[in-house]
Length: 357
Image 1 (cartoon, rainbow, N blue to C red):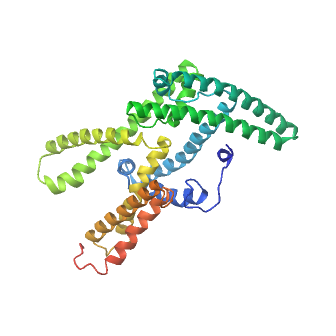
Image 2 (tube, rainbow, N blue to C red):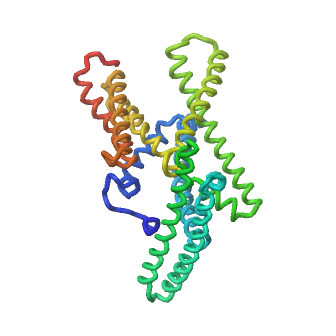
């Protein structure tokens, strides 16, 4: 619980996902690649009427991004505080709870829910006493210890319930359930007024449609212009390329659905899953662009093979991290991928005889 109140962690640790160093250094390279090389973002600047308008778009994007991310984190913190005084479900995914109700472990799960309610009552009482102690500035340490003990008991019961759900899913042939992405939705559906719920759902759908449209358009345009038109069909009519872009949009839409199903099975929340998937590729992409900008004498073949090697290293680190062999936070993959491409390209260019000028 205390970790949620740590605003800045200054300990330099490659294993830690979120400290000041991984955030500033790894996050810097992640955002630099996202806003500087990602077609979904770059096309917004290219759509500006002038260079000044494009620069203003980039600046406003940066100014809005920081307070927006802060607001997202603040909402998460406030929901966490809310559930310290209001009893949360033992598991936030109601579909999984319905499955366990219909299983042979239903009665055992219901007994755990009763224990959970009693344990939360004790924790809530300890929380109220801690608040009073903080106001009076007396007996704070003892109340904090009591709260930790009650919270540990509560989480122990929740873990038993989660294990029952996992065991039931194994019997049904399903993967492990995760309720992290259902916490905010549960809060919205159970505690906000009906009209606000409708507006919030409309906002979520509108933002999702906007992001999806821009991503599919970027993927389709890149596929047709940079690959199809350049290497496959070089001298076709504009109507032909428009039709090809439509089919490319369909293809990338199906691909996105498949990838979303995969990402849904990743541990943690969806925001973290998006950043993990981005970190696997963004560092290499940024390295390619920086090589083009600063290493003018390096040929295309050298950069290509350097990028392939860097990508293999990043995926190797990710797989090793998943197995527990090497513990490196995913934000560092952006830095590693970028500098691998730059370094290998620079060194290999001295030994590469046939470079593309």
